[in-house]
Image (tube, rainbow, N blue to C red; front, side, top):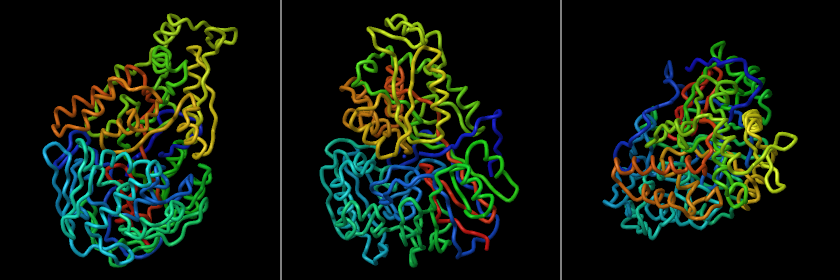
Amino acid sequence: MTTRTLRRAAPAVALLGAAALLLTACAGSTDTGAAPSATSTPTAGGNLTFAISVDSHCIDPQQVGNNDAIAIARQTVASLTIQDPATGEIKPWLAKSFEANADATSFTFVLNDGQTYADGTPIDAASVKTNFEAIQALGAKAILGSTYLAGLSGIEVIDPTTVKVDFSKPSAQFLQATSTFSLGLLSTSSAALSIEDRCAGKFVGSGPFSVQSYTPDQKAVLAKRTGYTWGPSTNSHTGEAYLDTVTFTVIPEAGNRTGSLQSGQIDSTAGISATDLPLFDGNGFTEVNRANPGVVYNLYPNESTPKLADEKVRQAISKAIDRDEITATLLTSNDVDAVSTLSSTTPYFSDLSSDLAFDLAGAQKLLDDDGWVAGSDGIREKAGEKLSFLVTYWQAPKEILELVQQQLKKAGIDLQLKFASIADVTAANAAGTADFTYGNLTRSDPDVLRTIFSVKGQNVNHRAASSVDDVLDAQAATTDTDARQKLVTEAATQLIDEAHSIPIYQLSTTIASADTVHDVKFEASSRLDFYDAWVTK
């Protein structure tokens, strides 16, 4: 259990989560962050009710990208491999063995015998091929999986239990990708479903739980799958899940989640506000916390707009943000400043805090030299145009962006905030009509940088190709640990120095539970894992 103490009196906030490896242990993270082991013998049976804050109207593991949706979807699928949260090592799961060729262009997996999907059909090599081809067909709908399979050139079913996956160019990230929910396996029949039916939970999974019912904006109920005996070695057991059902109930307002946990209407949630977390430190409750690996919360400038195409403007915005003030006043003792584009629990992370030091005078000088002059309202202007921007967002807590807004104003920069639905924010970001994208992406592999920033990936900056893209490609093409470390550090440094990335804070996830709940865990990517969970009746 983690003891939680706010660093100082803080305004009401709701801290919510928003996504090396090759064949041996990776460089970087050694933080297990896992929930403590049960203090007594697990008991089978019972229901656990877990509150989430938002419903993105899709629970298909191959399509979801929102943390709350992932919490549901992850339980329904098993993966070819599993990543050890303590070491980052990739280990067998559905595949009993795996190997990659020297340049990471070809990966071969040998599956265990006797594993089945929830409809009883075998988890065989042919179904792996069907899954990966279906993810390719989903295209942008498979927001994460499609990037993991970029460059896929062929899938060969060698025999019923052996499958070979080939890429047209090195893809060092692929093995870690096979441990994620995004490449989790669904039955062959699920590939033929419509996108809508898949989102509605009509798919058949390979995991320890199956979808019993899903009512958008209300709840999703998962039921234990009988006969499941292939839990991964990183969990505490390998048989069926202990819980009969897990119910994910949607409670949008943070205060209501606090009240629901206090009153016993729910058993557990990862959506308690920072100010309320001390209420659940003992007194019949427990807390567990783990930092999320991947890209930290960022403001991503849209560089297709003239003002944000100006590197000096972007650099001034980054310098004017006091990250320590944000973590000290709004977050908890478990939360730390962003000191790179990558979080500190990500393999191949390097501390670049010196490049992210708060420097208001430096920001002001950059803007002075760039011709931006303070107007009568304090907001800078040039050629009749205000240095004003709009960020459209859906993530809580809003107080973080409000504090950034106040900090930027001291440099003469106006940041307007607009709260919107996930769909509207996603559409605006995709269309490039927003000044800034705001968010993070959790993944326990540094290739997450390429996913977000590369012009061949999401290109969240809407920018033209530059030298950083070559570095991002190069880190994805090497299997040498030292060489990859150097390239990842170089990429992160360029992204910060050129202010394509404006980091804000590192996300961590805290699960608060009644003390009748045991062994809700974090997997390596800090995704929630209910397989070992059980409740005291």
